[in-house]
Picture (tube, one colour):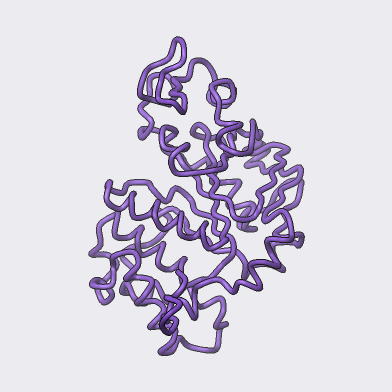
Length: 299
């Protein structure tokens, strides 16, 4: 996102690229996200139970676990969209309500009314509404920043197309463009790879890595276990309780996957050789392909 040192900064650089002084100050404050003793219940049934989680600044973290593990619930609880029964969440040491401007959110595509009569550019500019407030309307600067964000995700040519006319992968790219113009140090993403084609998936991975390189913290609910070591550097394994959390190389292990998913779990080690009594080429709950695992309403 940084501009060419030999030329003027681009619109997106001026409005979206991180303020390095602010990024440095935030990075010195650890952690980016701190969850303590968090419990959420639906009708007296715990969905997540006594979860402690520390997310350091500047990591690209996956949240993985079986259906009903509470992955989406955890994201929504961090955002204050769901009231916990117990526990609290801090963003850079302060309650979320005081730090809303520091957090961008990319929800599941299925949670949005894609038949709403608006176009791609307008949806992307919505990412600036938090900074503009309720009274000020988006102007030329916001429009230019939105168009440049769309360019980065390969959607500028679709700027004036109705969102109802987009494919699933195109919709996801628009969501990511909207996130780019939010200029948030932290991004929470709920299944950003769900239902996208291989080309879009590669584009999303490249964008997430760019955000991380810019000092952002990205937390994403993810289901394809086989791609965790390739796409992420940090991982949290969740099944109602937090099973493990930390660098992928340390906690994304056969033993922790078995604890998370229960029973036998096929596991491929990082050198590409299958460990004993597993199914080569896959990391999945026994009897399921990695991409067959989807979230349900209880999450």
